[in-house]
Structure formats: C-alpha cells, structure tokens
Length: 278
Image (cartoon, rainbow, N blue to C red; front, side, top):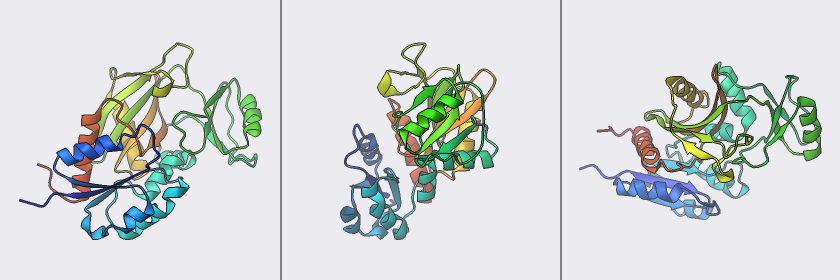
C-alpha cells in the first residue's frame, strides 16, 4: 500500500469563519496527512521534502504572510495555485488583462490609482461600479449613476480602485473550477431585494443552484486557464444574451457545498502529486 500523501495547508490564523479547517478535516478523513501552518516560524520548523503538495490559501497581499509565501516558493514543494496565479486573482487589473489576452468577454473597466491617475482611456454610458483594486469580499463596492460621478467619487476615496461598467439586470454566478475536477457546484446569488445589486452572502443574498448552463462552464474553464490556475472560484455575470468574466478567487469558501469542493481539492492534490486517481 502506498504511503498517504502529505499536504501542507497554509492559511491565516486571523481569517474569520475560515473554510480551511473544514477542508483540512475532509482531507484527513480521505486518508491524507495534513499539516497546517500559519506563519514563517511554523514553516521553517518543517522539512519541505516531507510534503507532496502545498495549499497556499492566504492573501498574497497580507504583509504577515509575505515571508511565509517566499519560503514556500523557495522550497520547491508543488503548489495548488502558484504565487503568480494567486497575485492575478487578488489584483483585478492583472486578472482582467489575462482575460483580455484570452479573448474572454468582460465589462469595460480601468484602474484608478490612489494618486488620481487612470491607467487607460475607456469611456461608457450609464451606471458605473467602483471596486477596491485588491480582493475585498464585497466590501468597498459602490454604484454610481454615471462614469463622471464615479470619477468624482474615486478622486475622493484616495485609494486604488477598479472602475467598471455596470451591467444589469443579470445573474452573478460563483463557480468553482479545477483542472481535473472541471466545474464544481455552481450557484448564483439571489438578491435579498429587487433593488439590491451588490451581492454577497454576508449582505443577505441567498444561494440558488438552479439555472446552470454549459456556456457558464465554458467561461469558467477559460478564466481558470487564463491565469494558469489549478483550482479557483470565478465570478461570472450572466444576462439573457451574454456571459461576462468578473473576478477570480483562490481562497474561496464552499458555502454549503463542502463535499463537492473538498472532493475537487482531493482530485487536484492527486494530480499535482502525480498520483493516479482510481
């Protein structure tokens, strides 16, 4: 009998309502040996050669995880989602450039820096979204009535932002997707009220798993490939006529679909460790 796979799972100890302990428990019950680490000292106390795969499930932009991340990269342990992939997930501008390079449709957008400078000249009519440039879990998002109003608001916020054309009405889908597992437990966020358009579970949106179609899966797989990811969760906007790439996330929660999501991680771990899947 082959030895069980050894997995190093790194995540932030300050992460609230983290799904990572659920994932660790599932993998252990599946027969894997899982070691959890939260800081550089913990990683340095370990022998990298003991591990078959690393799961770096923390913010690349978190200063207290930077040295840990560097140690993981230098260790040479195979990762699910490289640092480059994870950085593209967190910096919306890099994700959007990757989507553009791969011909994936997305709403028009540009970056507005904290210094009050935009990175390109793009114009549109109608409502405009302001989003923090770096991952925000739904916080800091505003809807303005026009691009002109959005630019005025952006100047007042004095932070790095993504300005994006608002496309509505639409469904906002969250679809986990893996290189081996394919599409995993797709759902969309049903708003708590008709006038609510900034959709997140924390703000009262409900999960609805009905209405999935292959055109959504095709875009999800394309988004995964665009950032060279292993297993990620993508946000997709669907209208009657089109499907648009929005964002992509590497440290995602399952929101009730624990078994499908954790099972997909198991498949991707086995692939990364080059273990045949029975």
